[in-house]
Length: 316
Image (tube, rainbow, N blue to C red; front, side):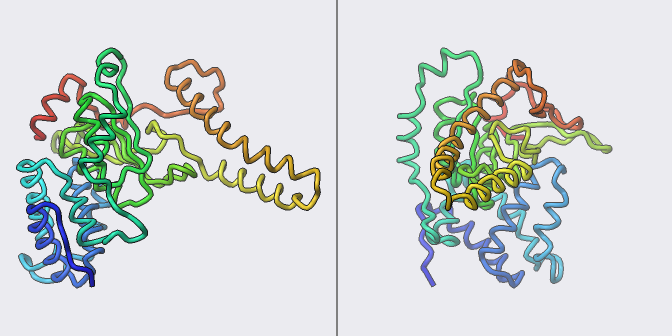
């Protein structure tokens, strides 16, 4: 088995707690890590993701109180927050790469120094101050959100949007952004095929409950409420049928040009879809066949923009 290696000393205590959870619950380290991420995200959701929380701890409730794996979940989150306050580094990514993935499937995280360089080369600091509207920064393969974090340092008021096909990375990005007081979206899906599974809205919000108001920093939202385009099951089925028909007719010489033309039109179709999404958002779309839901849930309320600086300084 590969030996654990970490860049930061604070990661070692997180690894020790993770290993203890794995041993207490009798599950693999990878399974314990996945459940920890889901539970931590749900814990910061102001009781809006309780089913996800109970699903995450289900495999860690065996044993007497105080000796169960679930009893160490709060300790892990507390260690993470305390370590991040002492050293502003991607400890979750360090733990993931050094003790979970070991670079499986070529999954290596971009070094933070390189992420900082790329953010500075990509984002114009003067441009962000000249524009009045909120700048949206997207990373279509965000990993643990390192580039988004560096981009957020350059423009603290930007909306950060990350996409990744790995649910573990999506939850690590959501935790990294929310615990640093950032605002944005994190989507679990394939940014090439536009197939998406779920999405999180990151940023301080209030949730009304019968016993009072709760404040959270992560909540799950419908895909329609994200700025990321996605393909519905209906559209995907229709597209697959189109290509299947084209493939069936490919034996005819005069069909070869049509197939090539259809394939070349796909990026143009995606570009037109993006334009339509922009038109709908600005209220200039005359075609009512595409509806984009922008309203937040009736029982949640986002924190005003002027509170963002306060949120970044102090989470609660």
